[in-house]
Each structure stands twice: as structure tokens, then as C-alpha cells.
Image 1: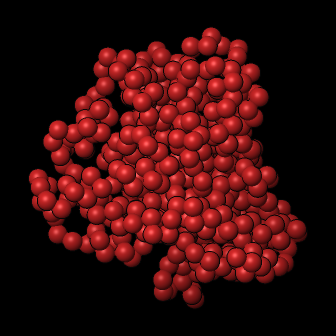
Image 2: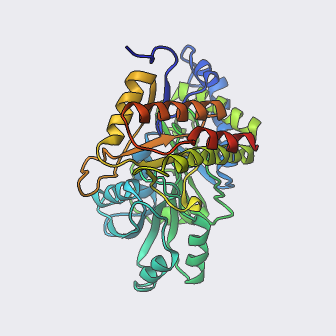
Length: 398
């Protein structure tokens, strides 16, 4: 017997829940790709993407997932035998580093583990130990989707300026854009990469590289950038097809236009605040459940936690047991312990992740937590009481 029939809920950290408004805007016949509505809608995306990123710079749109966007950014700022530094707080920073190595770029990594943000003084010490002009760029995640660790980007910029480091600051906001507060211009970020399937609430398929004039000048020093990755024509197209180096992702454009309208109507500051409140409700429940048994939040310091995804340690194979029960018995799907292997748990079976990004509200979070508590009871996982009440108190205090 199962009670999973009915409306399912995908609470993984991307792809996120797609609003009905977005789906309806995409459910239409193929448009004219040479003139008319599609061209005007595409042009309208640029200022509104900048609104979400708090940027006044350039935006290049690619038909690509997050991994493709990593390569797009790298291809425009570094070439074979250039050096970059990657600041790692989870699996996805290491993934960006691996991408760079396959392009022939020399990569150094400063690894801060899987459960805490970067240590700014350790980073500074590493940079001071190298020639000032060694690194063309410093790469890091704002939020690493695997660990749910959030880094303080503004502190990094301040430290780079303090020690006169000329490297470009490149930040992966794939998990955090339109969820966690991010100020591209104010925080001095030179390059930012993002994708459409998380906080932007659109099916996977398009991604973005935001960049300022410092990054644009750097690209001019690179002898060869492939036609597809070259961001130049995409930000200053003579013909419409140059926005995408070919046929436009037509229906994604329609969906993104609707999603951006939704964010603008809510206002980005309110979007950030909503994600913060929903996160605090989830953390409050987990804190109560953690009072008895082995459960714990992966990131101890709330300041270093994402407002888009929460990684939780259950131990043993209990993460996988809980996920399987929730999916088959309740209609809820939560995230796997991606990149969270540790001694005795090579597959990360002892971890789960809750995605709470994009089109999510209070009743959805309470449903998520209620189903999880039922699952904990069903698999006979020892935990404390009062999780739902603690979450409801956070939400009722709005």
C-alpha cells in the first residue's frame, strides 16, 4: 500500500519546481526565429537578468547546462598553461577545477573540506606565497550544491584588494542566484556563472555568464576562443542568431521571460527574504530532530549555510533508506548525498539534501518536513521530537 498517488513534490536542489505560469508560457507552437516577438523578448531578458544578479555589466546566454557554463567562462578568461586558483568547499568547485585541467589550464586548489566556508586568511596566505601575477583568475562557488556551504564573496573581494591581487574573481552562482543575496557589482565580482533550472525556475537547458569590463579586457588577450564559447558576439550581436551562435532556445526564452516577471513582481529583496525564512524553518526542524540520535546539519554555522539547499547527515545507509521511503510511499523526492562520501560511506548513503529554491512557499516546506518526519518514523530512525512545531513557529513569526 502507498499514499504517493496524487501531486508529487520534487524537493531536490535542481531542477526545481517549475511554476505553472512558466509551463503555460512554454506550451506553444514554434515561433518565427527571424523577426517579431521572440527577438524583442530576448532583448528584454538582459536587463532583467542583470536585475536579479545586481549587475550593470554584460550577460552572455548559452544553450548549456551548468557544466557547459563553466567551460564558457573558462574559455574566455584562460588558455592552456595559464594558472588559476580554485577555492573548494564542495564537489562542484572540484568539478570546475577538473573542467579547467581538461582545457590545459594549470590549476591549484585550496580545499576547505565539505562542511565549512573558506577561511579568508588561509586563502590570503596562499596568494601571498605565489607571484602576484601568477593566477589569471580565482574560482569559487557562492553556494556549493553538494555541501550547502555558502561563501562570503564580499570578504574575498576585500582581501584581494588589500593584498593587491590582480586575478579575476569568478563565482559560480548556479545554486544561489535568485535564492541567496548576491550583489555582483557591489561585491566586486568579475565573472559570475548561473543556469536556469534552480532559482530561475525554468527547465534545464540554458545558462549565463555575467562579466564586467575587466573580464572583457582579459578575453581580448586570448588568441583563440571557439566560435561557440566566444562571448563577444553574444553580447553585441549584429544578427539575432549571434545571441546563441545558432538557433535560439525558443521555448526556454518564453519560460525565462515569465520567470523573470515573477521575480520582478515579488522584488528580488523579497525573494531573498522568502528563501531565508523558509531555510530557517527547515533548520529549526532539523535542530529538534537532532537532539536525539545521529542526525546533524552538515554546516554548523548558520551564516555559512545556503538558503537554497540544505545537506543533512543521517549516518549509515539511512539517507538512502529515507529517500526511497519518501519517493515510494509519500510522493516526495529529496536529493542524494552527492559528493558526500566519507570513510565507511563511499556512496554518500548517509546524507540527504533538501532543495528549497525557486518556486517554494511555506505550505510546501511544511509538507516536506511532515513527510520527512513520517519517513523517519517509518524507517525507525532515532530522532528528537518537536520538529514540525519548531518550523511552524519560525513561519508564524513572519
